Length: 477
Image 1 (cartoon, rainbow, N blue to C red):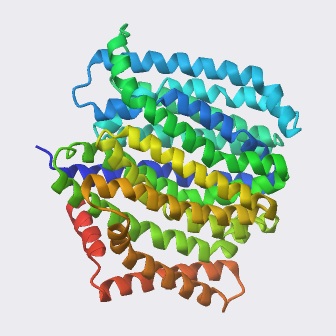
Image 2: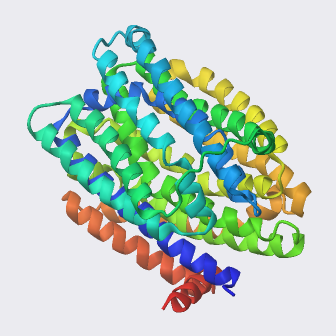
């Protein structure tokens, strides 16, 4: 029988391969396209982010996590979710299709009419593959997902780059996105063995909806909040400002969101196996928490320290306005994996009611801070998000403390060493790069200085997380 540790190692490995290989290729393609297009082109696509994201939330409806959590899932359960998602996918495609002129008028950007109608096709494609992804995740099978994702991102990236080089402008970004969604769905259907049966069970639907509906509402609140920045910046400021924000957010998201996705996808099904053993659950949860912080904190702080030479070298000086935004966003997004693990625990315990309550409270706080910072510019809006992130973490951990006796202060005590090492490493990197003028030299020497310092300080302090990483690597070998 496969142990929890073996499942963790295998899941982390293939989830990491899928997320980072796919996102690395995607990032490279985006960098190459960004060197050709203008920040305003990316800003036009960014204007639609909130509408596409909200539609996608309805497609999932929390049913994906409900399927993963249900250990005795039946064919009726799976097929019911499949058919429900297809209906929702088409409904939202037609909503966006007919609302495209309204969206274009809101932003005073006529090209958004055809762009919206093309991008919305991705919602339909994604609705056809939700079940396949959920079943693979439940089996901790990220290898198959990696094959599908990597193939689709390479082909769609090549299409987008070709179009950008041939003067298609913003359309190269739109067509690339839709092509990626279509190819990924086709690959998942080819690689997975499951095919839908002609079954739709009202009983199954009601059972999963009672759990998933709260996650749906929570997801809608979170998705709306995470994308409200693009809505506000696109409406109040310029497409150029929005383009710089979205590009900075993309760079910050590469380590943060990918690690959050990896950790969430791997830990959720594994922690579900321990949902009735609080002592073992608490021990495993703390392991995941400390290891996540040990990896993500130095990555995000290091990225903030190297933001200037990185963006100037990769994107050219026309993207200089994105530098300060990237530095600020990194300090906010470094906490995302910690948020994700805390929220996963509520789902593991079946407390989607608490999950929903938390989302409402946190978003009220976040929107309040956003409204206060809007008049001061995009940079201050991002600063406000740092305070929101930390405040919301304190709220998240309140219920974690109640469920498994691991509240805010205990978690901060676990995370403090990694935070201290990372901050001191970031200060060292910034001092080092001040001594050089060439951006490539700054990047290389800054990375080396940061890595060496973090490794040495971990050895000196006998970091348990470093030992755990070596143990995982040996186990994988």
